[in-house]
Every structure is written in C-alpha cells, then in structure tokens.
Length: 87
Image (cartoon, rainbow, N blue to C red; front, side, top):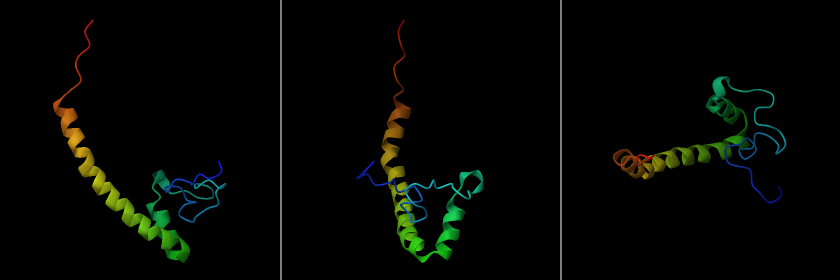
C-alpha cells in the first residue's frame, strides 16, 4: 500500500532489506531469535547500527512501560473473574 510505513519490527524499517524482500530471506536465526542477527549486522553495517541502537533503547523502555501499564488490569482481571453463564 502506498503511504503506509512498514512496522518497526521488520528488517526494512531497520535498514536491513528492501520493502519487497522478506526479513527472513537468505538466512534466519535459529528458533526465530533475531537478536544475534541484529547484533551481528550492527557490527558490520554503520547505517544499520545508527537505526538499531535507538530502536533497541526504545524497545527496552516501552517493555518496562507496558509492564507497569498492564499490571493494573492484570490485578483487576485476576480479582474479578467473569460471571458464570446461566443456562
């Protein structure tokens, strides 16, 4: 689609591939873990490293924020199970 940016999780957004190349094209990390692949690529490619390092910091921060933000709902949901259905 035109005018739609790729999601930040794909390789194109991180400078790894063209928009038409699947992220997994050519090689893939075992078990779907791409952290090692990204670290390796950032060691070889300064343009990738320039995009990867701020993204990694953002990812760490947003994961911490979601832990705090979702804890209230998790506590509420655990304390208030859905009502049972009457037949």
